[in-house]
Image (cartoon, rainbow, N blue to C red; front, side, top):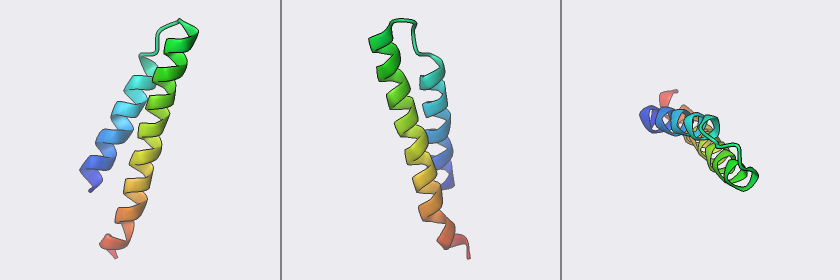
Length: 52
């Protein structure tokens, strides 16, 4: 679960950082990257009760 979260966070940050200079493509990649970052945080938050 933690590994999946880290993968989502890393790939989201990578996608957001690779956004080209064109406005439409930049918004699309940054949106996808942001979504993956949020998904990674959600997965991490959902898995935290398992470690209690």
